[in-house]
Length: 246
Image (cartoon, rainbow, N blue to C red; front, side):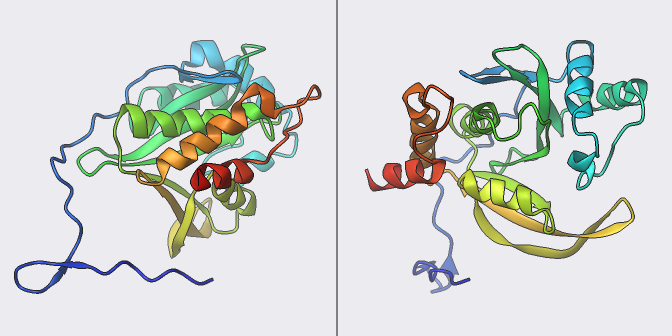
């Protein structure tokens, strides 16, 4: 893989290379427990009383438990064990968990969170992604990720949005790149998960890249981009390319 050379650095009064100034920077707000609504999906602050049953039913469709392989927890043997875990997650604010709710059915069909929230420098990560079979490969899945990005960049003013995954989790890595994230590198032997080594792939989106990505997401999610059978007319990548060229 080749990388473009970095731009010529600025220098200080001593002739040393330094980063570009960030004028009037102030720490950003931390994300709150708010709902984020879209056409196909909405994100609701995780509430086990409302979401546990729907999530349990949706995840049960993953009979082999493939969704849990690369997560540091699960699968759960009983609804009670799953509910206890949800109760602990819902009480925290980093990670800050959301249920992904299908707008048409009203059922919770997946989860996502903000985590590693660095408000002082404007960096935030999306993670703990678990999309049930009712959400996978559907417009609602893409829209849920767009809603979280838009909230982080447009509402909260963050500068950097991160995605990290097990380097062996090819579907997650490919999903991140489809969503506009840029590969940055691999942290070797980063953690131990479920008794296994994990090398961690890092990807990111920066605030300067966001306007074109936002326009691409909006074009892809528009009703006219889907035919009567619900199939996309243009791929998300094509929408990004068109937005960058506009």
